[in-house]
Image 1 (cartoon, rainbow, N blue to C red):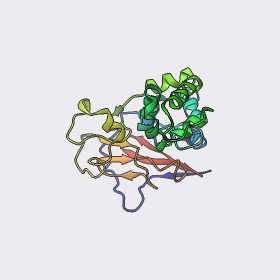
Image 2: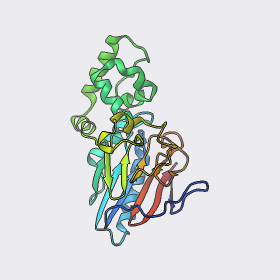
Image 3: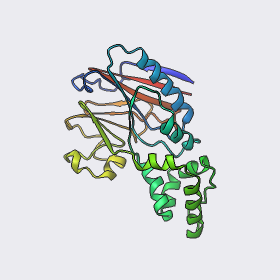
Image 4: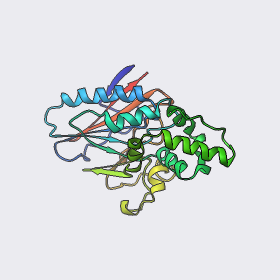
Length: 259
């Protein structure tokens, strides 16, 4: 496991001008998509705790988790357990809902949606809870039985966590969402599907959104930094790298851990 700090962006990325800031005195860490990589989460949380302990002047500390805790990777259950009960002390916490959490909850309500969840890595989540994953297009009775087995295996605290996830969080000059926003639409009027799923129309938009949007959902080798948005999904399940954006006063930097 390797750790890296980046105070500047990779070549080809745009450095922010520093005009957007979190609330005065607040040190903020935004953690990208985890996707069942509990070992990377543990390593990154340890780095965040160490970094925060050495950050003079911070009166409040906050961690924002950008969503997509489950699917694809081997230990979704371990990730959710850590988020429920094992976070560093002294931090305010905000956990956002990603499209993968939405798909999990939809399967619990409607087992017939399994094929869509399966193709996005839902079988890995079932396996992490000790539930056998059916083939993609299993009969409805098999899917219902799988849903029942998953519901029985899912701890009540994990279900409560999933059911209380937020869709957005705003802190000073930053807006945190899982996927992005629909340009030209007020935050109060945003479609939850866009907040969890959008790519087209958002990623290439150069509009001033009024706040810098911090998001995940679209993986890349490095954080994607633009004047109006910062993408922090560095492909934990693809590239073996999990990244946190660090915000304090006018400064932006990154903490990463990787295999």
